[in-house]
Image (cartoon, rainbow, N blue to C red; front, top):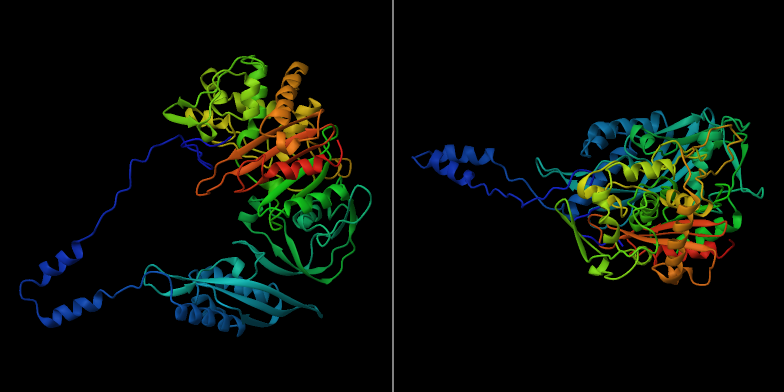
Length: 555
């Protein structure tokens, strides 16, 4: 379950060993002064030299420096002195452009800025103003934060510039624009015809933005006038949608019906709210319909767009490959050694556990890493990639679910990185939507691309897998997943949900993070759910209860 030596999240290159860090202590300054002035240099020369080597302040800015720097920036911004405000930041060019656009493009007038209570180098402040466009005005109010840092070159305290200083919904490269929206609003409905709003379902804010971007122009609506965040190149690459901040005049919304189930959506919202950083997706294997999507973080849709190492939940895909290649069967004798060496790396199991006399099914149920990694010498570098693409439809960048999504990534890797991929580390990246789809494919035997809006609405083409797993392979996968749900690492969370069920837990290590990300994917009849709790620990204890609570609602 993810606890291995030297297999780290986000590593995409071949393994390398860094032998140490070289530190150079520079003593040349003292030597240089002695050599230059030791031969009878005048006091005037020495004084002149000292003036050329001014002391540069280092370390965190003082409370006074934080206060005065923040006041200088906020006062200049409030007075409309863009050049002066930008000069108080460490990126005057970017600050000048965005602060100029705040008035010119966003049409924000009468700005007042009120400082809050400083915490270290951070200064919170509130913003109030008026958005005015062609005779229409609406109030604008929000909170933001700035941070004061010290410039390395001269030690001067400056505002650490990011677009979020101007508005918390801005990412670097984004802009604020007020005008007639190019995209009409949409009224999103659940599968029963009820309206979906961010006020009722906070997790759906980004989903609703995506629905408008995709269907606004084809749903029959008429655009209004609004202040909105227009995404820059970086945000567009990250598949972030434009966001409406203030609606000056209402457009006429078109109507878009989704597959979301109001009961499941409400339950998903409640469950992720119990964790600091959780995400979950529920869907129907028989159709691909997405019933619920929820995230603790309402600013980014990790459930659909996250790119995280899935840990041992990836062993479902790995096992599919091993079964199809007839390299093992659920009941085959297959020990799981405490350590396994591959291409110079030593892999460890969670808590250095081992299974000396057991079957492959037992190793799957206990999520014993080395029972999978020791197959690496029998595999080609591209085998796992092909399995993920051809059977599970992953990593092809062609899913069309109705809103922006990340379709997973299983790159071709070699050596130790290929071994790490077999247990969902290395370069493998997934999100709850992807892992829910994996469990759905096992349950139904066929990949059906998940979708939030029926393809019939806009006649879009959905992704297909190039082949289907055999009924024998499906039966073997269900056997090991059912064993895991009954007796393995998923048993506690899945208690009382059998017998037509299966599950897989996972833990994925992340650089600089004390606890791993906890993963859980499971099916119960015609219902599947998958979730992740970031920095939560073992998946069975963290994401497991979230997923199981949704499965209890109906299978």
